Length: 491
Ligand code: IMP
Image (cartoon, rainbow, N blue to C red):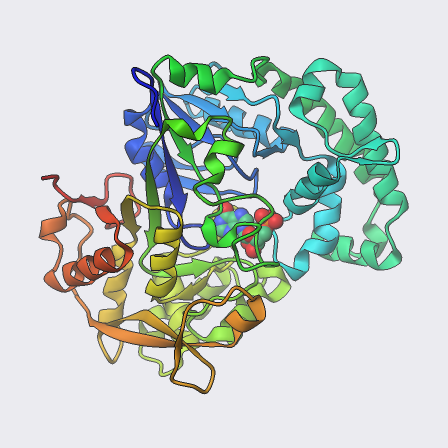
């Protein structure tokens, strides 16, 4: 129950595989909050916001660019890359956005250490990780100690005994390098896109430590000494928005393991990772994309072109068929006519600009999976729904059928029996989908700002989504800019 006279907190999560446009929604609603807080993940997130002054990609700093008064909190569920955080702060500051005097880091947040990055580069390829050391860092957090070596170094340790914490970081790095196998060195060189002979571990070790040392000294200034910082703020009336990173289908426990991130991404995790008792919870906001995407490996039932698309997008861990390559090679409008779903997927990716915001990796593209969206909305208790990229659905009007595919049921391979989404990843890979075709629309909706003005065919699809998910649609994205939203009028 919410405490009388106190503030409250809302939780915003992505309901698919990440990249649903959460940052744009956070930015839109941020003026209604005093604090925007992260509760999971680290520099693996790439939250892009387009404003009239330019495009910003945030990795670790919460996305409240539009509310210069909002305080920014990084909770204990996060893993911080000091060097990237310092660079991000500098970039925002030089773009005129002050972060320094309003960013607060939970003392319980852990740090990404240099050996985590090396280990992720050595073994993250099979999952298609972002190479940010996320998996190894969360693993070390859970392992705590190995022999006498402290594996989990928190920002509180840096703040209280910097030299002691640094000794652990150095020991962990030395141990890791000493225990790498020849195969590991090959993988490392591969991941760095250099020849094995050019891999100079001594130099790498000293560069990584030098960067870590100088950045860590700087981030200590943001670490609060008060473990009840957020709780006190809410008790005193602050309104908090928790901003999820990576989305619920990538949750370490509930997602499509092992093709997941290593943090808890579901709505409930906001309270453990955000350092606030759940009694302050007010509502849950979900964000989903109408044309779906996924980066990295793993099951994706509605993917156009299925396994062929997954292999293509993950070639050289995504670095082969980049945005630039596809722009030089294909004409998307003619590919939309192709009978091949794989080729149509390429066209839809190009037209929707679905490439990694930090990496330019091609995102795998699929039809809206309404079975998955319904389950995610219900499992996470979503009250309000924002649906993004409605403008991209217009491209289906250029296909020979002119209609919008929506996955509306799962079947076991070779059978007509409908099934619920299985938990085992192997079973997920064997699913077949039932796809309904919805009437398309050819109108440009980029300037529409009211839900009721959207084309009728689009509105009937949206109303169907609302019925299935049981959540109220509040806004619909009609273009990339922050203002491009068709809002539902209340009452
Ligand atoms: P990691 O989080 O870097 O360990 O990567 C694990 C999986 O999560 C990979 O498939 C990544 O592509 C995916 N992933 C991590 N962060 C994001 C994100 O912000 N958006 C979409 N996918 C992500």
